[in-house]
Image 1 (cartoon, one colour):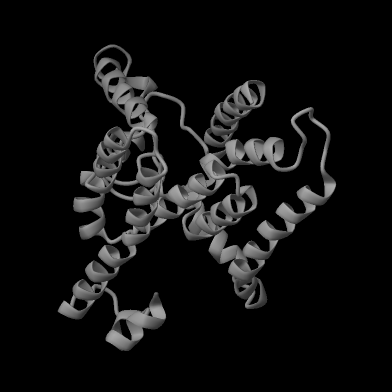
Image 2 (cartoon, rainbow, N blue to C red):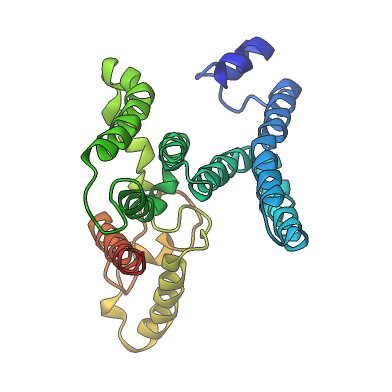
Length: 263
């Protein structure tokens, strides 16, 4: 995308040109967001054509394509979520049509576009392992497994290879997993930790009345200032990255086991 952006306006790709908001930037980003959403539109149309109940599928597809998060957030924040959701839909569509290798390839591509889809990776792994790399009776198919594995590896090598060659992989990983942004990711992102933060604020009020000595002074302002940074609680013990990792893995294991059992 940056190659095209440089043609439109070279200043767009200048890393030292922060807060650059010329009309060319807005026009380029908004136009490319809308155009790339055609990937999602094409997948939804394919779902409609292959459905049994076309009326219901049309309603579902329209509700996805016209979802406010795409029309408002994506067209203002420019994260290209519609485009990436379209890749996910194509991956699901390929699996539905029996082309499991293409499904795995597209999901690998999607992961390299936006790593937040890692949450779907365990379920994808179990599904493709069972449906593509094993017979219905559970007999392993080594050739199928190696074909799928090599396909995924090639995608990651093409995507991450340049970063490895330039010695920038640690920098890339630190940006992919920015723990220093804090649990609430600035201005209270709508996640479970926001609920924990509310509880901490309630407990802070109670502690100020009955037990002021248990208050962590550093956390009095930390959780309510709405800025990017490590979240420090005033009463509740602080949550570290390893804690969130353990919770995530535990929930992922539960879904993976359930998917494996019901396959």
